[in-house]
Amino acid sequence: MSHYKLAFLGFGNVGKAFAELLLNKQAEIQAQHGIIFSVVGITTGRHGMVIDPNGIDLLDALKKVNAGECLSPSSNPQDFIKECTADILFESIPVNYQSGQPAVDLIHEALESEMHVVTANKGPVVHAYRELTDLAEAKGRKFFFESAVMDGAPVFALFRETLPVANLLAFRGVLNSTTNLLLTLMEEGQSFEKAVAYAQSIGIAETDPSGDIDGWDAAIKVCALTTVLMGIPLQPGDVDRTGIRGISQSDIAEAKAEGKRWKLVCEAIREQDFVRARVAPQKVSVESPLYGVMGTTSIIEFESDVLGKLSLIESDPSPYTTAYGMLADFINAVK
Image (tube, rainbow, N blue to C red):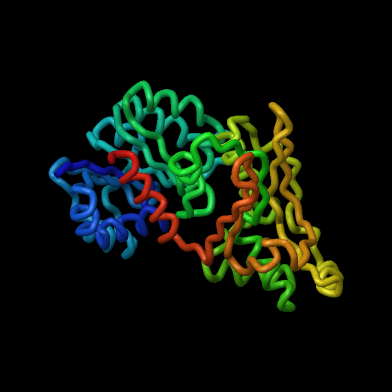
């Protein structure tokens, strides 16, 4: 039986969902993988932090945070990493599209401290993938990030674990759940403004939804995929990016009359040592696998040199599906 000390950097919706999943799956993790664990640290921007090398009552911490209570008066992430003495750090702080900071530096600190790192954050993958992966290897640790794209769907593990010597030539998909929901609601007759308000009311869209609506979230996901799966680093500014603000009800009606519907399509095509990447609204026909992907469902279609086209669909993701990606990374990192 192997025991691991866990620490949470970020304890928002994803962090809390991951904590609940750990509690629910604890017996299975032990029985199937011989893994037992204790949580020795939690830090959050809004609720302070707690460190206990003897183990934190995770259920109690969840109750306090859900009730709006503070774990402690203050939180310093750098000090937290140095003091928590964890074996594995789970990072789920908000993404920075432009630089990946401060997550990049915090993950670097954790790896230097010889922790495995699991992140749900796209920023460090795009802005520091090679640096952090090389550091993890030098320290005999893992830097995994399955939840960075398509929540818990095994996008990166698919190539890492099950498709040896497969070369990814291109991919195409719908990778932003918020915009797909908005376009679905508009197709049902709602205005753009009402669709956004509804998405905000159910927690799918942020108070400032521009990261989704203007295509930044989709673009950084494209960059993560090209960087890791194609081996060609891209920055969000390298992606030809157009959001969905310009899609009107008349555009929706026109597409419907043609037997088509609008999707915010993410695509990348490898051209020798160059990748041509694009995020833009496109009209797709019923023949396309993207056509039937509605609401918050996502899809990606891979084209490789060995399998032709292979599609992966994730229906109606939630913080719990994102949390499962982190759980899978945990087990794969230490197995």
